[in-house]
Image 1 (cartoon, protein in one colour):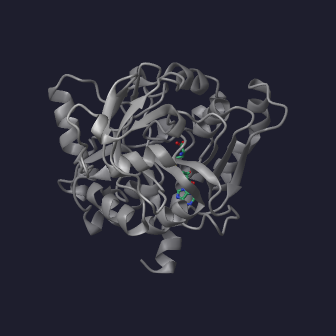
Image 2 (cartoon, rainbow, N blue to C red; image 1 turned 60 degrees about the vertical axis):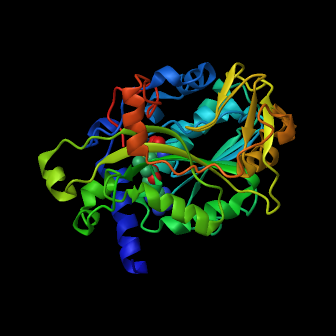
Length: 368
Ligand SMILES: C[S@@+](CC[C@H](N)C(=O)[O-])C[C@H]1O[C@@H](n2cnc3c(N)ncnc32)[C@H](O)[C@@H]1O
């Protein structure tokens, strides 16, 4: 896309979120399904404490609150009215910090209006949350410094960007080494037809800007991130006949991925044992669709996961042992983390497991 058409896309999205939509009830595609069951107690409580005016303007498509956020500095790309930021504000505690970045004045106005409300509610002397105006493709230009964030989250926003590579590249820059990008977005099961890309409403609804899920793996590799690790996936059915005509046979899903910025030096594959110290995950830490760490149980991990666990905020939560200590005496060298989320959703359904949460407690509402 040229600079001019990229600006047109952003202006149209600004209008959609600043002027057209007033609450999540105004959305035209029901993109969420109820899924509060797998939300941890603390997360449920924190979300429940967010002001109603912020919550009714929530347009997210997933749960972007990872484990172990206490004391961290978190950036939310496309923070909207600020729902995830305020919940995270409670969870990181007074010593943590949250920065929301958004380009739409009306959304920023709502989020900024409630900074002090949440500071008081959480009993903090000083607010730990701020909202910055800017583009997610130009995070550094918006004044956010390189290598200063422990975690970046984003909820249903990257699909709206006309330049997803720029978003992920800048996210990579502002993350600290060992930092994590944990985000939910809408993905398609193949490339969305070009005609649909030009449909302003479907773009604004977070549908026609959706990336083919495979593209995320390519982008992540080009930028230098670890392989995207699928955390949760939920189908997003588009029911309206006029929309279906535009979209052809493309299917959509809300998917949550976690990606890490890793040091150049990779750790060896190892056996790791989770110590159960993470709040709300005392018995088990579900890390991605393939890895779950039960407290006290050894798990053999490949080089990449060994590096992630050593370089990230999870390093004190594991005991690391050589592969020779494992039952088989060896570890996998490279686990392929590429997984079609559409196949994953079918597998989950047929195994009788409930799908992981796409939405927060307000998920009876439509959201994007
Ligand atoms: C679907 S809403 C999601 C808002 C929020 N994450 C939530 O869960 O409620 C998308 C938000 O991203 C913002 N946005 C979209 N494209 C953007 C861009 N290129 N740069 C900055 N903000 C953007 C919009 O202004 C809007 O507030």
